[in-house]
Length: 185
Image 1 (cartoon, one colour):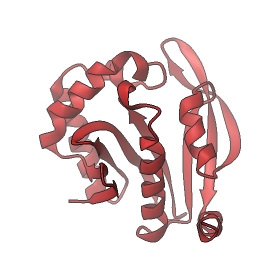
Image 2 (cartoon, one colour; image 1 turned 180 degrees about the vertical axis):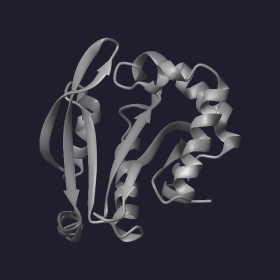
Image 3 (cartoon, rainbow, N blue to C red; image 1 turned 120 degrees about the horizontal axis):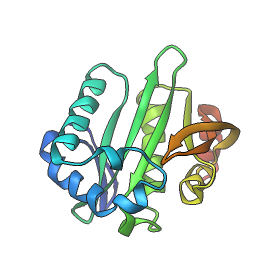
Image 4 (cartoon, rainbow, N blue to C red; image 1 turned 60 degrees about the vertical axis):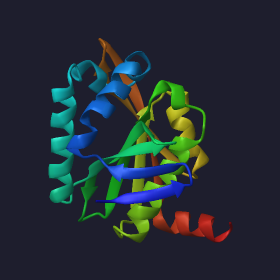
């Protein structure tokens, strides 16, 4: 099982079926804040829905087409991060993420994204990482901006959520940019 240590209080681990109840409880407790920007809280009604999501994620992992990991901080699951897909031909991926509402603003997701970026470039040998967020989701957009991504464009009417179209801003980070930035630190 993949485990990545972020710091002495935080780690990532590929989601397993044993995490279903814990993940569901986190989603359920953060439903109002999550559904402002994401579709899945409205589709996650029971623990069975969470189990099905984890099963799909493990299948994608087995097929080398992305996966989701849980984020644990101080012994409890606080969110999730994933490679939404992996394009082996173009050597790129997109990272998606979310945190439980009471864990926002602590730098956890920035550290988790940095860990996933490092893994993408060093271990998966990808050359580009993308992150997309709703244009009005300032908290989510701050993460790629903080990590040195370049805003590459806005896709209008990208997603229909609660009878309203959301535009999506796309950020990209090329491996060479990441290497140059990390050689300065």
